[in-house]
Image (cartoon, rainbow, N blue to C red; front, side, top):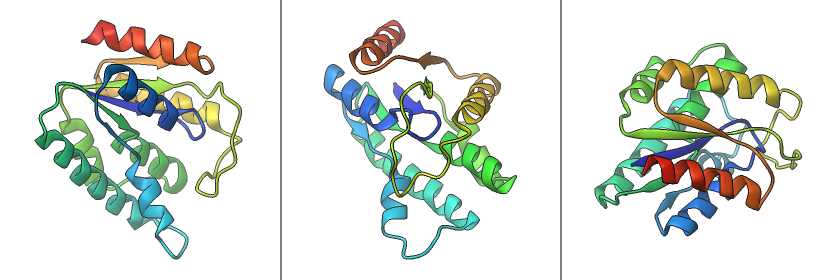
Length: 168
């Protein structure tokens, strides 16, 4: 089972991914886009979203080759899709096709109820609630199981653990 932690910027996705992986003694895949952007020596462009999606899926494929029963993934294609639509008004159809082709995927949608943390790779502290609603709508349309996680620190983790235990 693949559990993807998704949601707007600065909503605690990376912390939650690592915390869940530790709690369940399962592997996790950290956000590939951060790695890609950190080594990019220019501002990113729309076409970089496709490269980030391709790199992310390559990393997922390597992880799936290990055939672990449970894996946690920090972000995923949905984040790239939502950001492309929000920033550029469109997304490469390949990304959408790949996103819809994923099976056995469950999502944890992180509510933006945590304080904003500045980060050179983050862009949008003002519209986190708007973005959250875009994620929620997209998840409903995808039809994969998902749950919203809220709260701070251990309360957030405990809520997510309860959801995951219900799925496994």
